[in-house]
Length: 281
Image 1 (tube, rainbow, N blue to C red):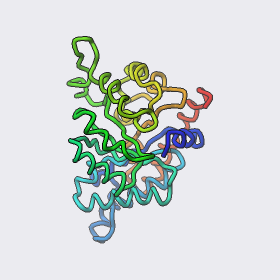
Image 2 (cartoon, rainbow, N blue to C red; image 1 turned 60 degrees about the horizontal axis):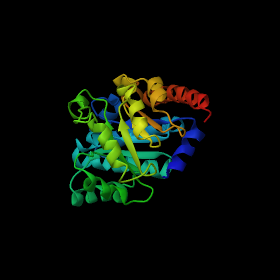
Image 3 (cartoon, one colour; image 1 turned 180 degrees about the vertical axis):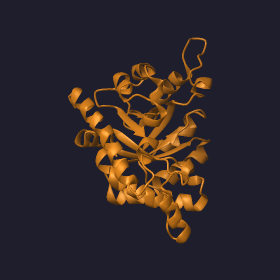
């Protein structure tokens, strides 16, 4: 998916919402887990995802499966992830699929990670850790229409341990990541992860990366403010993909879980539509 196609989807759907598929069998509705116990062929992870996707697709432009929630179940989890991606590609080809894998290793290993996600799985983007440098990132950049989403400034408390540290000139580490990585790819192939809880730091991000899309986790259950994210992180093409996971997919634990997820996604989409209108988009 190109940058122009992604922006057009945002305009058409009046939304820049990404639904995070952090599917945890300890949190999905109990009737799905019970059905798995009765039928070994029933895939509770995939069936939960399918119901969530069908319910929320009208209100979002992207889905972000977090690989940890699938790898935790071994082969069965990987199969559920593959089925989820295939279901999206077959039924909702306009959705931007992000594999939240946070990969990053020496060049040969990164080549295989890239092959896994872009050739075998056929996702649109993968999150990548930048701290092993250019040769660990560039293997992901060799696929036309595919994206690297580089970790820049995350929303967790521990982000202060390294990402906010300064060198002798006062440049913070996340700023160095933004500056150096733009030598590897432009705004048509690279995005950055910036946590919603970082607030006015978005102004610093936009100073260094004015044109790039930002993937923003942390609204909803993590306490990030959509209004603050948009105030500081907006650009002329929206430039934001805002993720919500738990607040949407676990809005209800009964057989109405998909219906309630749709309601939560619809409410966020309404807020986003108003913001787009206010910016004349």
